[in-house]
Length: 394
Image (tube, rainbow, N blue to C red; front, top):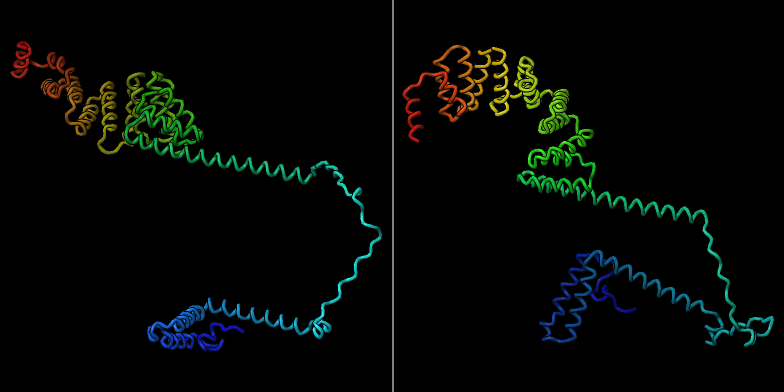
C-alpha cells in the first residue's frame, strides 16, 4: 500500500489534532531545508510534511481524506476477493475460458438482393383531449403573463409621470404639470389623484375652466368622501367663472352639504345672495356660518367680514356693519376701501366729522373712489386746499 499522509507524519489514523500538530512541528524542524544546506531531498520531505498537515490539520479536509482512504481500502479488498474466487481452471492452469457456442441459425444469411430499405409510412398526428387542454392552458398562461406585464408597466409609468407632475406643480409650472398628469392618466385611466391634480392645474394655473370642470366631474364618483366637498367647491368656482350662477349655487350647496366646514363655500354662497339675489338677511346668515369655520386673521376671514358688513349696511344695521369693518381693519390696517366703507357708515349715522376723517384716511391710503365722497361731504380744510392747488398747478 502506498504511503499516505498519516505515514508521512508518523501518526496513527486515530490520532487527535494536538498529536498531529505536534508531529508536524517536530518534522518541520527536522526536515527544514535551511538546516541541511538546501538539500533537495529534505526540501521534498518538508513539502510532503506540509501537504500532509494541511489535509489532516483541518477537520473537514481530514474527514474527506479519511473517506477516500476507506473507499480505496474497499476497492482493494474487492479486487483481492475477485482474484481469490476466480474460476478454478483458470486460477490453476492460467488457460482462458472456452468461447461460447455459436447461435443456432434457422436459415442462411440474407443475400445482397434482399438487403434494401423500405420507407416507413408516416403516421398522421392525432391530438388527444389532453393535448388540447395543455395547449389551452399554455395560451391562457401566456395571455395572463402578458397582461400582468402590461399592467405592471402601466402602473410604473403612471406613478412616475404623476411624481414628475407634482414636482412641476410645486414649482408653478402649470403647463408641464398638466402634461405630466395627462401622461399619468394615459397609463392609469382610473388614477383619481392624478385627475384631481390635473383639474387643479387647469383651474388655478391655466384658467381652462372647461377642462377643469370635466376633470372634476370625472373625479367626483371615485373621490374619497372627505374630499368630495372640496371638489364640489372647485366645480362651483368653475361654474361661476363661466357666468352660470344657478349651477354654481347648486354646487356650493352640495359642497356645504358634504362638508359644512368649507368657509370658502359659505363665502361664495353668501356673495351670490348679497350681490345677485339681493337677499341681505340670508347673506348675513350664510356669511356668519362661514365665519364660524374661518378662525384666525386671514384673507378669507377678511372677505367674509367685509361682505357681512355690506349686507348689514343694506339692512340698516350700521353698528353691526361698523364692527365688521373695524375687525377687517385689524387684519388689513392699510386698506383704503375699509376706511371708505366706515366713512359711508358714519354718513348714514349723521356723524359728519367722523365720516370726513375716515374718508380722508381712505384717500391717504390711495383709494381714489373716496375722493368724490370726501369732496361732497366734507368742508375743504387746509390740507384739502393744498391738494387742490397742487392739482391745479400740475
